[in-house]
Image (cartoon, rainbow, N blue to C red; front, top):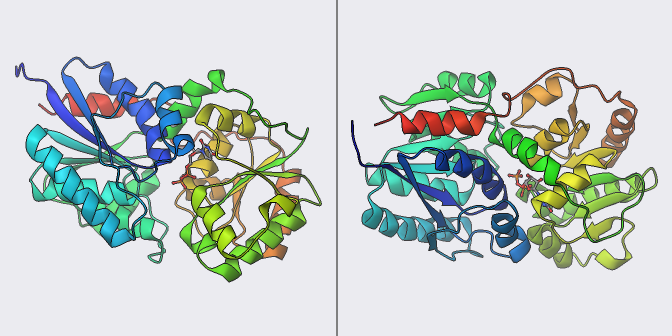
Length: 361
Ligand code: UDP
């Protein structure tokens, strides 16, 4: 038996990755033969988009902080690759572990692959089939060069088989969704945000490039949300990119009927979710969390990677058309709060991932 621990370099950079890593890093730490080194690329850097998550969820402090942010996709990915490559050359890990679909994911996978270091991808096989999304490109390329592909569902496995372009010797493991693990583990610790909340409200987040970079769509979406406020108050933790785009079109946040608040930590988000009447979002993570917390969701996009939620009627795709959004909000507010089908594993995805990696040597 090999007495050397398996060394993993984990690449993190964006908020949802901190939440996923909170589940997986904890499971990895239970294996004495695994040593985890964390690189934080710096993609998200505000305290309430980054450090707060490390503190609240007791994530290990990153071993390397690259502090790379605020650049266009190409420059961001290139600079990250350069920084990650230099760490990989020093650390010589057995695995590089990447999460999801951000530029940090792509940079980590590419840097590792070019150094012939095996890549493990958590959330493999997800597809929106909309290649205008930067995330879709990141997913496709990352899967294409990954050796261990951790899939949340059979649908994601099917996408990989349909594409048929995985590296020789790669392995697909269906493990479920690590965000389910995180929501189960941290729900008992949820805490009320410092801001006062209406008795009943809709929780809303939006930050996808296709919704905020086009001023016409952004205005349309804001107008739709304003209309929804006539039915129920809308509470919206505001992503920094969305705030910037709203400033760009001269939108007066303080005069809006939408209750915009600063981004909150994960424990407060779980509270906001559990006390909401409905979720509206263009976030991938939140669509699932709504379901995990027994809430319906209206998705502000025309497609989703988490199609099972739509198939079972737990989520609906409203896009950005105000009339359609109004109709879907009314429909989902009336829908019975029943979610009988268990999707995306049983909340032990992180253990499966850690066990699989621990057995690779
Ligand atoms: N989230 C949070 N605070 C907020 C908004 C979102 O903790 O103010 C969490 C949310 O619960 C989910 C994750 O961040 O777990 C989703 O991240 P995001 O929407 O940035 O990314 P996506 O899921 O779209 O990749």
